[in-house]
Length: 252
Image (cartoon, rainbow, N blue to C red; front, side, top):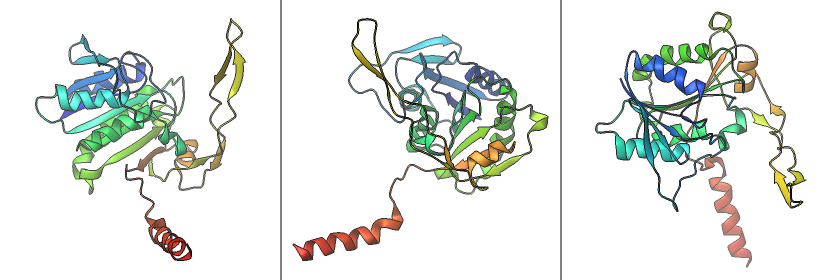
């Protein structure tokens, strides 16, 4: 297979390196990743400054931009022939529930899908994972199966792997996104010159970890697979929004 690989932790991240080397042993892989950690970049594109694509090793490039920039450049400026799939990861730290709204890992996969390619986003449920091989094994297992995915033309799978040895992982579970409580408040501080600064607060605690959620699956030792999409339309609200607008118009 021809694979475009990216991430948001940077081109030197251990998760990216482990997956790149494993995939390259069996497939043709081009890796385009940020030149530094761009976690939390979400779907942002760099539009005001030029982007620089720098070769770092054979078929490995760094970009002074976001994960979305990397995939965009890889697909529109680097690939001579289209890849079969876009893979983002392996991320250090989970992308569960509401995390997907901010995740650069998920955003890279979304950009791949936006440009017409099936995509995987892969994350470890640890910010200092000791069992990256489990996530590598998960990708190697799932990758040949993606050809038979019934909705391949719209495929974005968000995959979260417990930080456990492969033999201790209980299997795969298809899940929905769980939900967190609101984030902790911003932390007010001062810099060395006494000027006020703020740090974004920690993520919120888990609010919805029902048995069908990604939170629950990973906690129970399963690899969570959540199909997601980039269409933000709330279809359930179309009718009531139309009714609301008509009522306001008639009442004015």
